[in-house]
Image (cartoon, rainbow over all chains, first blue to last red):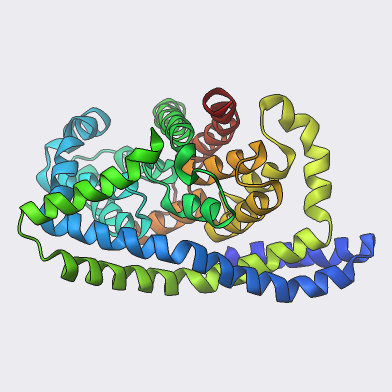
Length: 192
Length: 170
């Protein structure tokens, strides 16, 4: 999958570079691109590490569990009877709270645990995997409260207030999650 | 308002930890070490994608694409330079981050294009990758409507990014 995307990008660069006569710049980009990658990692790395540290403090102090508990009504609304299963509920709330805090690396293991449990529940009750699909759609839509990585990129290019995009991110995320859930609900009916 | 949010949140997290008797220093150091390994994990992908994307931008292909798509996207409030970002986003997270940071660098972080790019990055995910991970983990052969529903959510995020920047940031 990624290999195809990569080959496509490089082939396009080669063809367009030849057509527009900018092969010199394309050649130079192999060096400047690699340098930019280091620069990007340096500009997001500090912030990423800092929030990983704060997340660890939240885990140890029980604050993560409190956040997860606050999400219970939402999980009940989205996952209906599956929310009664303690194991599924715990994994779902962990997955969602990690997503909210913008920690994708912590969200995926919990999400996979939740998906496995929902899959088992669906099997036991002879249902389709609709709850699993809903979980997948929620994870592709990413409801993020604190987009620290993007804020760090903005800060590194001298943004006046790197976090001033927050309300706009919240609005766009919330609408995207709502559209994703709605689309999943509607398509579930069409797919029968 | 947003200036207060992050420092207040940070202080709140630490004070709560202190009140609960957490060894703050040890927890921070341990978490940051985890953050470092995350950096190490994402760096190879960022390097590969950023090099490819930088080459593509240097060839003029991205500008051409943005130029042709601009009449379609600009009425929707999405600046031309943000379109390649929207096209790459569902496939590659590090590729989108690369294009996004290039847009932010070129247009400026406080320009409309720079802001829309940032909001797009903050409000969407790498749908194809996420679906691949979950379906591979469960051994699902058919993800049925998961992909179209996820792409609907992405499209909504992109359209809303333009609108939200216009509405909330003038």
